[in-house]
Length: 216
Image (cartoon, rainbow, N blue to C red; front, side):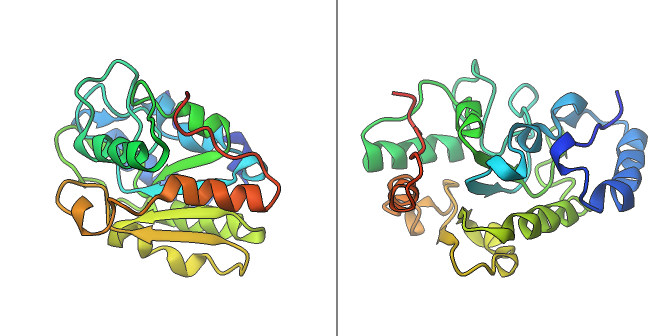
């Protein structure tokens, strides 16, 4: 199955100038590439630009087969135990909101307008960061530029995500930054950052429906 550009985002130059080269490189790679081709653009498929209210930037898909399904930080609903970063996200949510989702499948967030975008959309199995230099970051930059037209909330965890902050120039944006939820850094400012209630407070102040983060 070829990589099919997400319908609502096909206007981005990436899909004509960069994707053919990336697709050719993936086709030549004999390793198991994650997620499956049909899920590579799942985050963008789920959130057209005009429905995107919140953006959470991740780095690259989980390198464990069966975990990644195209949305940053999210895993298939039957995955146990949860990846450690996601487990820490849920710990912070418990402290912030008093509850967390029943599984690691975050597609319900996407249905509410939360774009869970990794800055690399593929990874070789077992090789975290293995496609960081493949060229996917051009898509991230163009997506953020496209979403810079009206106030939105952006959650940038860790230095990698925060490196894309210069693309967020609209004075009305909410831009939240903290340490990454990884076990290596979560105690350096991620825990206690309360991103979920802060995003919802901002949405409510703008007259918008808050995100039901917990599914409760």
